[in-house]
Length: 284
Image 1 (spheres, rainbow, N blue to C red):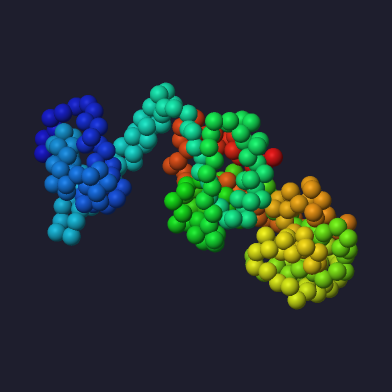
Image 2: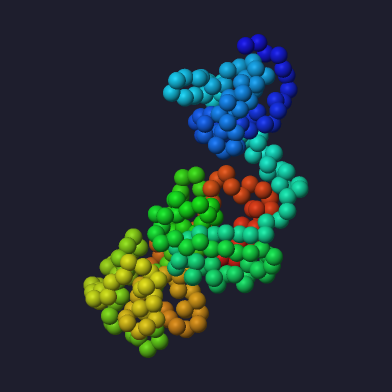
């Protein structure tokens, strides 16, 4: 195949090549663009003729990138993303909607109290929330901006810390230390971890045990005992006096609450500015 052309191939050919390379086949690329497989094959054939290089190996079981195709694919992807990003910066409208997913308890404790602060910065932006039942569901969640709990490392995602997790004995007004201890099961440190760090001797959790911090805090607000509560999640309760911190040591952890998004998203300046304002509102 002799090289005849010099310069930039048609954008349509490059977009189809990128999709076929990213998705691993002509059929998948055809579905993405609403084309026939023959139309995709024709565009890629035109691109190969323009470049004078074979980009895909055609086999009975499907196609695979050649060495030159593998080298060319990331260059095309970076160029298309840069073009999209710069076009959005120059000509795109400011985002009018921000959608965030997270556990119901995180939406309730972190997002809802931050809405007024966010709308002071972005009064025309509509906030939408999507609640998930389990943290593991976030990996399948289509909403790409998410609040997650953990160490801040998720493959393929950027993350900014909203608040570090700090655990403190807390209770409703009138409930004192040595009242029943509300047990919380899960990955957070528990009462025995706290007692060891605080040098408080043995502690015995009560016969109330939850698998949700939200439920443990609710039980504490109702006067059922003392919870080893999350300071970030109990912030509103502590500010209003529904709960109070007991005069006991706190337990800092290695975990925290993070605002996260896929690395390939939030590339435009306007989108990044919107996320930055949302993050500052969440941090309070």
